[in-house]
Length: 397
Ligand code: CTP
Image (cartoon, rainbow, N blue to C red; front, side):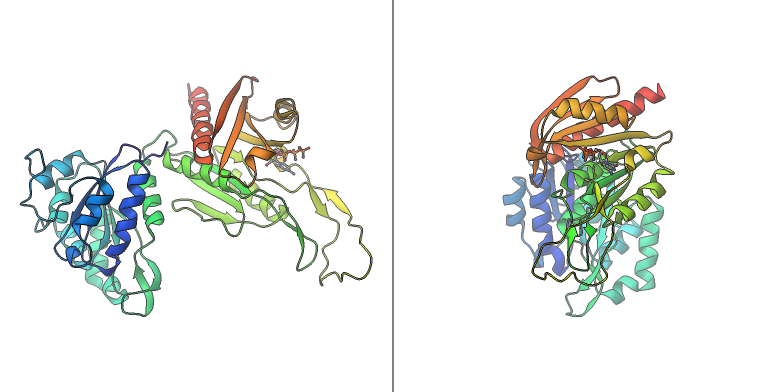
């Protein structure tokens, strides 16, 4: 279940062209299970209207401190007190200044003052406005008070030029919000390394030997660990997967890069979740030039890659994955023992590879098993991270 499920989120929208993205943002938040209250400044109302947000959230949207909630209480006080977090996106230079000064002259700034939960601010404006000392000082003030300021992206701005100041995409903003909501979670202070995707071994500048792993399960594990407060390093072997925010990301391609990154990162980690489908066979030679097809076939000489998971040891918790096509549990148990793991997550290749769902059996070091029925990879990740949290609490008991 998403960390956003059942959370009360205030979406504060101010007068920027980027306000159109807030419609998607509100929709994605609602789809993730959040209860969303939308507040718009008068300037925001020049770009987007209440009707869109009321239709998406199923709740009243507010644009003035004079408006009352349906229960008759003062909107900005009641909503501010009951929210888990408030995200101001897009935040103009004007609202950033007002928030820094503690103004209460519009519904967004007034609500921020009565807020109990976390405040996140996503500035979006022209580069020169964003880089102006007045704005940067105001942002510094907000950061010093514990406000989570989301840095804008660089890209095409409303003026038509490319520069810094573009509002991040809705999913990027939601990543930041999720990370912030989970910051105090049970993995707080824990450093978690997750490997994901499938390695590729080049035969020549054009061809490679790879596997069907997409990295979706590994990314879901990294996101779940982040949302429970962990400091997560994602080592990912897939150049095209969307990488969520709030993670330290190391992109790798082949076994050698994965090995180097993993050994470096585990030196200071508390847990390793080895989800990557590591290539078992490495070409004896990588041709510098494209191998010409000619008229006959070729014979490839492949060497067995060393088992990475077995070669990294230390005080940290180690969770492996087992990809099987037959005798799932027996094979997984064998790998659990040989690789001396704290747990192994066994999945059938048919149900795990290149899909959005998975079905796994978690086998603990004492060989007790948990069968996790077919569900989204996010759901599987939740269950695996529950197990990791349990392992930490047993160690620390
Ligand atoms: N693994 C690893 N290094 C390798 C191969 C696998 O660290 N060279 C890790 C995987 O990331 C996974 C676990 O070991 O966590 C099991 O991987 P899997 O592919 O299921 O099995 P293998 O150990 O490669 O054995 P087999 O191919 O015989 O099933």
